[in-house]
Length: 481
RNA sequence: GCCGAGGUGGCAGAAUGGUUAAUGCGACGGACUGCAGAUCCGUUUCCUGGGGGUUCGAUUCCCUCCCUCGGCUCCA
Image (cartoon, rainbow, N blue to C red; front, top):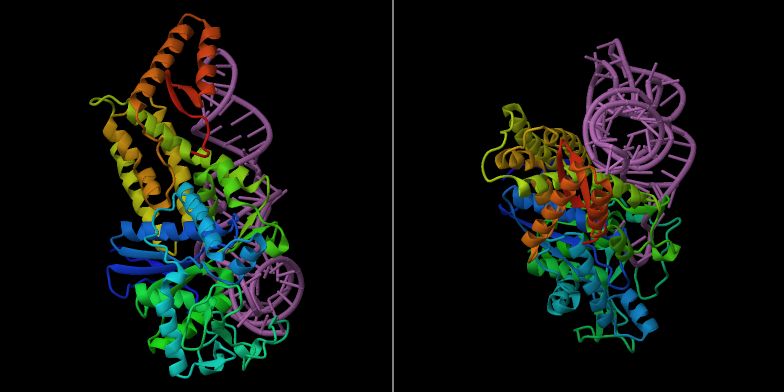
């Protein structure tokens, strides 16, 4: 297992990661918003965690990664009432769209998506434990957590409860003993889904869903919990208070990872501001790889400002430059003779291996993806100039040049090779035949015919590139698959 | 008000107690090409919010101020 360093919000430091029970690593991420279609900011954290888990696997750990589905909460109930749909049905609909977006984004690492309402026994048990231990109280058929009983409340976010006064949006709820208390079990309201409980019919509060799930699936303590920076308070603070009080074990989580938020022209993207940019629409326009590259081209903890008509367009330009040498290598490898061809100079072969090590090092230092990408850009120039050589490279040499891209494929989830479907060989043969026909036309000076062939292939989405007396082809541009 | 994250070239955005402060986008020039594309080479020499301090040396460490964004019970 490779050692690596990770920033932890609670202790505000970057420190070496040590799993609780190596090589197993338990991860939980709050990322789904199944009450509405996802916007472009929502998927940033999902991609961040996908890279984290890919790296863990590469480095010899055995991650178990959960992403919860809050399929019943106030927002779903409100939205369901507006649309005349059952809230859990609504959640399911949006969850399915989220899964499609994740597939397009090459997010492949989530082991399981636990749904909150499948964990009612665990939720009731945890609320019961909190009542029994005196951390929670019953009032008007609801159960509330008494924040004053938990002295560590506020440690994650740096918020002290005494400070929660000026400017705070605390609603006055006469059932609460203190305004900062939060609900664990909400008394039934007519027309809403309800379950029986020792305190009467009702439904779970938002925060308790996550700790009930993690208690069941990850244990009383686990390694990594992630989410957007905006969830640190109060949601994650409440999770700590619930779980640590209920089990008496601490800390609940060893590493709290909070992902920097995406802003729209400097402002946070949110429904209430009405500045939401659809994830699905951007995936359709730019494809998952470009959007993924866009997220990974900044450090995960920093903010990312989205400018309509500019940010993703620029990301597409940059990603085309970044991925072109990889695509050229794939094409050369496909066309390389089984034996023969020039070997790589030893210095260059060593450089390829050193580059991969450098990439792992950058990631192992709190996931410096931005610099890893910068390294891949400079490697691209090396690859391009190597391909300009007069003598074709051997298959082994090409494979060595491809090592950093193989790394990018494995860890960053970029550089997806062209899909090999049935008929791929036939297609390749047809393209090769067209290229030779064009070469013959060019040789006899018939540029009209040569250009006709080129535009025919262009219409099929293929671009021809003449270089060093050879012609290669590639997909016209990166985009949706 | 309190808590947190930031302020780096035309733009996006890294990093570092010390020679020319990454990388990309854009721009300009050149090579290559039948043309184009892609690629390569070069240029974009005066970019680290203000003011103090520590130091031989600060963009980096400390103090302070200013500004932006987020959180303060809907939030990825």
